[in-house]
Amino acid sequence: MIHYRHHEITIHRKGEHAIPSHCPAMKVGDTAIYRSPDGEVQVKFLKFVAATDDQPVSPTAPFEGAIITSEGAVITGSALQTVTTEGIFQVRCFVKEPSEDVFKGWDETKSPHSGGHFPVNPNKP
Image 1 (tube, helix red, strand yellow):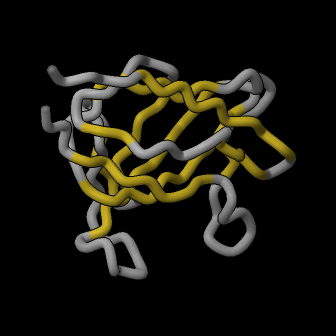
Image 2 (cartoon, helix red, strand yellow; image 1 turned 90 degrees about the vertical axis):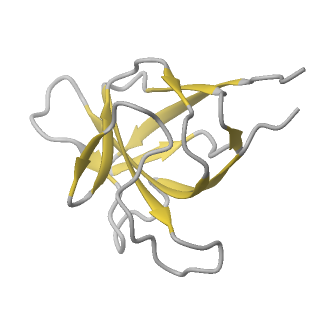
């Protein structure tokens, strides 16, 4: 029997930063919600080609329905997501507070902790 897990990741805005509560390892078939008590959430994903790579290179999301952009595969909002793609992903987190017009968060030099890395493994019985 295959067991699926549900993951809830809370992203907190701290100044210009958008810090996730954790970046859990997931399996294909698991579900996840990214949310923030501070405003609207946006999460960008980049996939590493191999586990030994230093930089992510592919704008691929572990979830269906992400919008593919030059900056990554993007999900916006707190909808339930089902994990569909295995691999090693870099996560870049952003939050837009109600009084703001733009999302603030991940930046390679100023705010690298506004995200993280997580593996998605196949779910085998």
